[in-house]
Length: 278
Image (cartoon, rainbow, N blue to C red):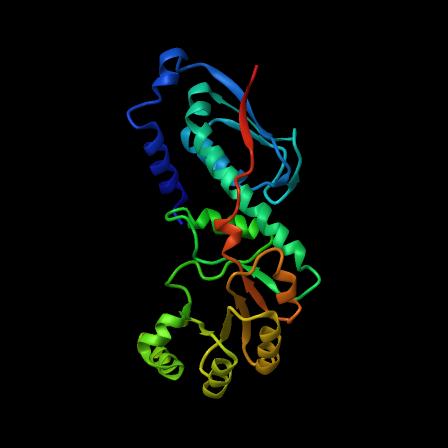
């Protein structure tokens, strides 16, 4: 991820021909201070990105960080203080808040899922259900919250899902074609394949040639049976409609991973504000 290119694009989108509100009433040489205030409890995320934004706009600005990414925060705390030209502070304000509020909301929700199953071996994974062009930040927030990233995109892991299998005609065809493709193109990518039933699991086990089995939309009872069938031969992943109320029942199966798209697309932004200090 080219963070600097993203920040440049985002600032251009916001500032356009100029921050005329600031240009109209504040001298370009005026220097000021501002603090990031926490307005609700949660897990803080995005401090490093915020720092990068300020430094891109004004390399000589001074930033003092009081709370690091991944910290549990409470209402009224101050995360950082920045001293810079007022034009810098006001131009960066909305981008900093948009990114930090979104990332902190995801980190906070992820931490809730992680804590819910901390007594079990399963790891929480994100999915590709992300905001276009903002995926890297959302996935970083998942890690800050204690989760793990699944594949970043379509390029860094093979995932043979129901549509792939149906278009190929069978589980076996999908696996064989994929392994030939990887060999012919000298690609070292892990293969995950979706199972929709216990019969699919049996067929995958009989055929082999993969690294992980995704057990999609299984009940907790069927998931437990599938994990026992696989018996550590391959990594196992539970997926499909799992939420905070049900995740523990899935974790009890001793599955290796549980992927939860909701940790990103159901996350609510944390309330933060950037306030001038006189």
